Amino acid sequence: MNLINYWLLVIAGGIVVGLLPQAFPGTNPDEVRWLGFVVCMLLYIPTIAILRMRYLKMSWKEFLIGIIPFYGTQHRFRRLLEK
Image: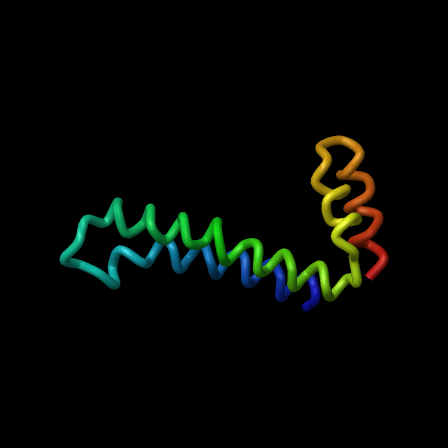
């Protein structure tokens, strides 16, 4: 999964959550959008992150270091620019 595919999947997830209320016109659109947002946050985004991590051949330790606010930013960009 290269960087373009990664961003396309992230953007597609947002578009699907935005269009989800139109798929269920008989229900409350706010509840449907909230449910789509929760599913996206709990399942979709972590799955994409794991796929990207495997593509870059990162260990879980490197992944967790990348989450650290200030140090992790430098580590993450250095790692992402290698591929």
